[in-house]
Amino acid sequence: MSAAVSEYRLDGIYRQRQDGFFMQRVKLPAGVISADQARIVAAASTRFGKGTIHLTTRGSMEIHWVKETDLPELKSFLATVGLTSRGACGGAVRGVTCSSQGAVGFPAVETLARRLHRHFTANPRFERLPKKFKIGIEADASGRRHLIQDVGLVLAEIVDGIAHYDLYVAGGLGREPQPGFLFEPKVAENQIIPLIEAIARVYAVHTPAGKRIKHLIREIGEEEFRRLVSLEPSYLEELPPVTGLPETIVPVAGTRRIVAQVHAGELASDQLFNLARFADQFGGGILMATADQDIAFHVIETVDREETATALKSIGFGEQRVAFRVCPGNHQCLVGLSPTRDISKMLISQMGPAAKSLTWALSGCPNSCTQPQLADYGIVSSSLVKDQNGERTPRFDLYRLGEEGFGNAAERSLTLQELSGKVLEIG
Ligand code: SF4
Image (cartoon, rainbow, N blue to C red):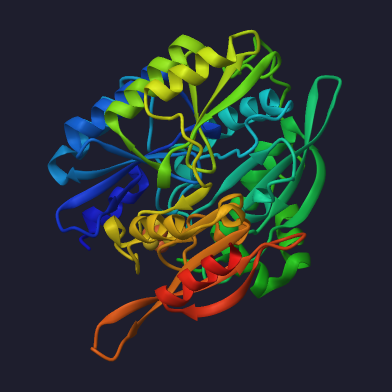
């Protein structure tokens, strides 16, 4: 890869598997996007890509099939509606995620997600980190997604209008999954940015290139890490309280959540246009990209259920789908080992009612972008093995979620046939 191409990463761009094409990721704080912004993403996918949008498990949107010469114009086009991709890939603070958009505590979480996004995005002090630095904020711990972040925040309480968060550090999936540990309970909102700065600085100074915080913790231990963080000037800093009008744009109280399920997170541009129109009509002009690669809306409770169901059905989102997270795999991703979308379709076609009622995730390589360790059944394309015809075919590890923490590998190195046999057994 040329220096210039690797430099694109900080602009949220990865080279695609197909020579000459690129993927542009768009950061959405807490997955929230306005209908006007969604229309620009849809239009951009047609103008610069092939008219498709991939929804990621971190609530971002990706446009594939972009030519290198179009990248600058695409960036400007997205910027016309305030969308940015800075830091969406590479060694930077990635998009701030949230998987609990429907929870009552979401307004506080959304507010903080926006502040963190504004503070760390394009902030040169926090670019060129050793590797990705992921922040996730949750209104509660039920989805366990706080455990997979470099910094995971869980809303603990709101006292006198000030939100406090349990702050977890050093989680991650990939080849060496490691749940984050509780670094500090009940951190007041105005101490969070300085504390994350201190953590990020220790990470940047003490970690070799290409490694995440979890690696540093394995090397130096929790105690030494805490000591180093405590030496940072911003460790105990308290920012002035933020005053002013509320920043949230997603209503929660008095609304009901409606989800348009999207198979494998693959949306056509006209579908996204239609969902933006639905948002204008029923959802206050707001869409939410969810951690399950769907699009959600908060609709005022009094709006007729039949009307919204009919409207969604009329644009092709009426049917209940299997909850199955899927990454682009070797359809587009440079390091993908298996055709994830094809495999997910094949597996779904074999599922009986028991399997269909569970959550699934399939990752095209051990990087585990679909968070397979957090699905009822998670599948990781773990390797390529030569078969008797000399052809390299993928092998799969099958994870099963337990009562707490991450799911564990119940089966390793299954062939596709063996994997589909396991799915049939589930029923
Ligand atoms: S899991 Fe692997 S194949 Fe899938 S998107 Fe992530 S890096 Fe690519």
